[in-house]
Structures are given as C-alpha cells and as structure tokens.
Amino acid sequence: MAANMSLKKNEMPTQPADVRSANFNEVALGYTAEVAVNEAERCLNCKHMPCVSGCPVNIHIPDFISKIKESDFEGAYGVIAQSSSLPAVCGRVCPQETQCESKCVRGIKGEPVAIGRLERFVADWHNQNQKDAPEKPQSNGHKVAVIGSGPSGLTCAGDLAKKGYSVTIFEAFHLSGGVLVYGIPEFRLPKKIVEKEVNNLKELGVDVVTNVVIGKTITIDELFEMGFEAVFIGSGAGLPRFMGIPGEALNGVYSANEFLTRNNLMKAYREDSATPVMHAKKAVVFGGGNVAMDAARTAKRLGADVTIVYRRTEKELPARREEVEHAMEEGINFKFLANPIEIKGENGWVKQIVCQEMKLSEPDESGRARPIPIEGSTTVIDADSVIVSIGTSPNPLIKDTTKGLEVNKWGCIVVDEETGKTSREGVYAGGDAVTGAATVILAMGAGKTAAKAIDEYIMSK
Image 1 (spheres, rainbow, N blue to C red):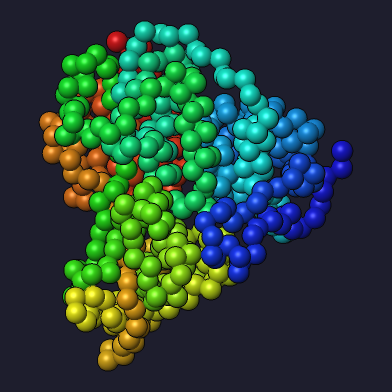
Image 2 (image 1 turned 180 degrees about the horizontal axis):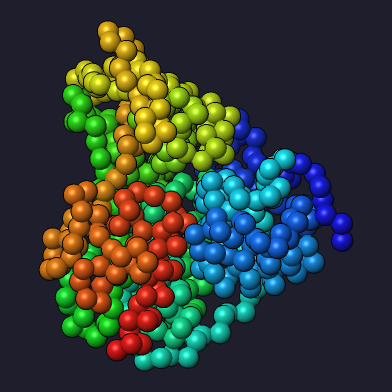
C-alpha cells in the first residue's frame, strides 16, 4: 500500500462557527472510516517510532495506525487499550501538537500525522460497534483505594484492575469523571463519552463510590483500617487562585472553576436549574490557558460578548492552538499585553475592568519574555461579569488530615517522580494534586506510573 504523501492533515469537520457558538453540542464531528484510512496512510511507520517518545502513556502509535490502514479498527483499539484507559477522552483533549505529533517525521516538511484525530476515531468506532463486555481479570486478592475519579485516578484504577486488584474509587462529587465532567465543557468533551469510559472500567471490576470526601467522610488512615493495602491520591487541584486586585469580591466575579463546574456538572445554564448562573451581557476572562478558553466559549454560548485579557501576546498563549482558533472563529475577543489591576463596580456589581498595558522584555535565562508594565498606560473595558482563570491549587483537606504526608509551599503533594510514592508508607499520588493544574494526559501518565509502583510494592510484601 503506497503512503499518502500529502503535506497536510485531513481536515477535521466541525460545526459552523456561527451555529456552534449558540449551542453546547460537540464542535468537532470526527473522521469517517474512509478519511481515517486516508490519514493513516500518511504514516511512514518509522523504525525508531519518535512519536511514541512524545506520548506520556507510551501508546504504540505506529502499530495502531497500521491497523487503521488495514481497516482493522477493533485491532487498532486493542493496541491503544494496552496503554490507555481513556482513548476517547485523549483523542479529544490531549495537546498532541506539543506531544506525539511534535515528534512526527511528517511534521518536518509539512503537517504531522493527525494522531489525536485517529485515536478519537478508533475509540468512537469501538464504543459504537463493540457490544461485548471486556473479560474481567481473575482476582489476585489484594485491595487498593483510589481517591478521585479524574484522569489520574481512572488510569491508575484501570491498570490495577487489569492485574486483578480489587479497586475502589472514592469520588467527592455525585458523578464520576473528575475534571472531565466538571471542568471540560460538553462542546469539547461530551459527558456520554466520559460515562462510557468509566463504565468500561466498571466492567473490569472497578467500584466507584460517589459523595465521599476523603479527609472529611473518611480519612486515609481509615482506608487502611478498612483493609486497603495501598492508596492512590488523584484528587486534582480544585482550589481556585485569584489575583488579589480590588473588586474581586463584587457580584458577577467567578473563578473559572466555579463557572465551569456550575455549567458542566450542574447544568446551571438551563432555565429550570436549581443553581442558575448569570447570563452576562459583557464577560471578561482573565488568563490564556485551556481553562480560560473553555470559560470564554461557555460564556459566549450563554449569550455574552466575551473578551479574554492576557498579559502576553498571542504567540505566548498556553492554550492548545486548536482551542484558540475555535475561540477566535466563534467571535471571542482577545486583549493582549494587558494585565487587570482593578475591577470597578456599581451597586455591588461588576461594571468595568481597568487593565495595565504591558510590553514584553527581552527573553530571560529560561528563554521566555516577561511582561512588564508600560508606566501611565491603562485601558478600561466595560463588563458585567468577570471569570478569573489564572490557575488552581490542590485542596488542603487531604494534607491537613493525613499524618506524614509531605507537601511543597504550593500545597502540592511531594512524590518520587519515578514511582509516585509519597512520604507516607503505602500512599502514592499523581496528577494535579502533585503538579498543580496540568493536562489530562500528564495526569494519566502519573496514574500509570503509580499503578506499576503500587503493584510492585504490594507484591514485594
């Protein structure tokens, strides 16, 4: 079969921007089988597989793409499933452009192979066509507790379940999925996809117990008393940060975490919602990461004219390029080289944002240019709502109720990077609880690392 030497990826079909900006349906529509095979034929099946080195969970990428070339889509899923417990999620939200696709040889003289889009196609094909439940592994008689049902917790649980462990996930919310259900909007990651991935793990024997706040309902010490031989902490980073500027206590100011949780998990945008969220006329988002894009695009769908304020330039935006492009297509405004310094109010509600104009310094030792103020130069933006998206930290509850658990000055759990082992015997951790807010795939990689270490720890006993 001859390789497809096109320099460009097959385009991902999407809803038109003017249509999707008014609904919460998924933006990207997915490849057809014919297009997936055509894109797979762009892969050169490199001997040294550089793409695999860019994948935090080490999916055997050329192998699954070779299966697609043969139209063996279930075989392709089998290859991915050896390394990833959440392929339909990863195919949608991973920053492939800075990971696997950044290593693709085809990217030297053109666009890399669309690895993420192919992974999504394979996972969706499997979920639509495979009706048989996976074979439940034989029990090895050992119990492990997992705290949090986000990407790190689900990955750790899945890898351990495949080895025969009895795994129980304890989730604080009433639905499982962690940041996948409360943080990422429906238009980027449909919740039925997350539900399907979680159900796949349940079929392997993983138990999920919701409405349990570890450190309040049960402590880690009590988990060991209940017979669990090891504990994995994948509780994420749900504590929002604010800027500490005047006016942040005004009505109409949200953290991105609250705004997205209320809309994604609690469906606050519905007219019959028990916890409604305001439908702003003019919303301003502070920040430039993926969460800022999610918040801005959600506010747009609620009818607001939205402006993202970011203190560097478009080139430095940390969000995925695709998300930035989608936001721009949908009519989101961007105010670059501006830093909010005050939120002005009227009758207790947000009225205006005062921004300091900025410029970039020469690159420092790290190679990154720092934003510095232009003295005496400010801009005022009218607004009735503000969404602050400048990062999150781990909730201190687990740290405060667990003896011997070392954390750093930001409240993140300190672990051995090669194993995920904490300072507490039998306790491992990974994901945002360790790194602070990061990507889904890095959290999955940490869950995978910890599962391997937990298995070795228990078996050595």
